[in-house]
Length: 271
Ligand SMILES: NC(=O)c1ccc[n+]([C@@H]2O[C@H](COP(=O)([O-])OP(=O)(O)OC[C@H]3O[C@@H](n4cnc5c(N)ncnc54)[C@H](O)[C@@H]3O)[C@@H](O)[C@H]2O)c1
Image (cartoon, rainbow, N blue to C red; front, side):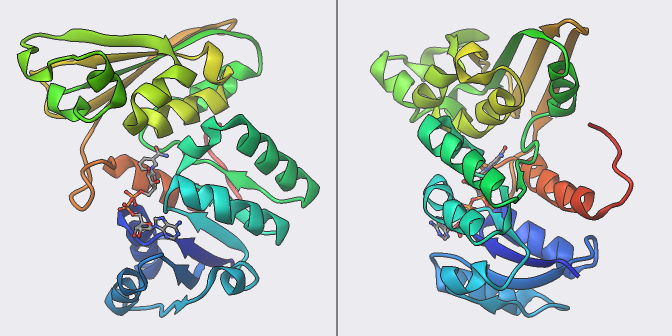
């Protein structure tokens, strides 16, 4: 049975562990690591079927077949290269770290050299399957439009730098338009979504991002419009935040479990 090691026991890590523990995915939950040992041990205590060991990173990487990073961009930078060097397959949730071209090149090279797989689940967006298919021919444009209630944009560097008064926004307003590479610095909370789309499609420079504030909204909406040789498609997801971490959409945790099932299943449906 495939042995799994989870790095990061927050909302997504816990959700994956519970899905394995309740039999939704047929793998062995072998080891856990979190920079907060207490958090990891609380998770272990709450499980019914498995009792994964809390291990140091170096030990964990040599004890499992697949490492799941559900921690932070820092963890991607420090742990994922080690995991690939150890010959382990890795699923990365903090995909925003791959905005860094140097890191991206390094990880892809290590995966190739060590014959490992790097998995990036679709996360909080819908339509990565269509982008993958469209990539087999030419894609001329991809636009991500993120629509949030104004309060959901507070704290973004772009809002402070431009002196935007979010509380004065009374109707749907376009706040930002630019490349994904600029958008991830201006709106770091959008980084995972923009990164996954850019990696699947036409890269960080050519992917366009619009950020819209809408005071009538309660959910975080992501719309993707893709045009290419295949024609055109449009997707829209209205994400519910997870109860434990309002910054993370519930769909992101579900996409990690679904990716795990796809890895195991001999029948693979969808691109
Ligand atoms: N791909 C997507 O679409 C998508 C969507 C939502 C969240 N994410 C990303 O997935 C990651 C996990 O999200 P979450 O909601 O579970 O976060 P969370 O804050 O609930 O949990 C993260 C956990 O990782 C631990 N951690 C942080 N840095 C660590 C490190 N260097 N080593 C070990 N443990 C570390 C923290 O202590 C915490 O327990 C985040 O980076 C988040 O940005 C991706």
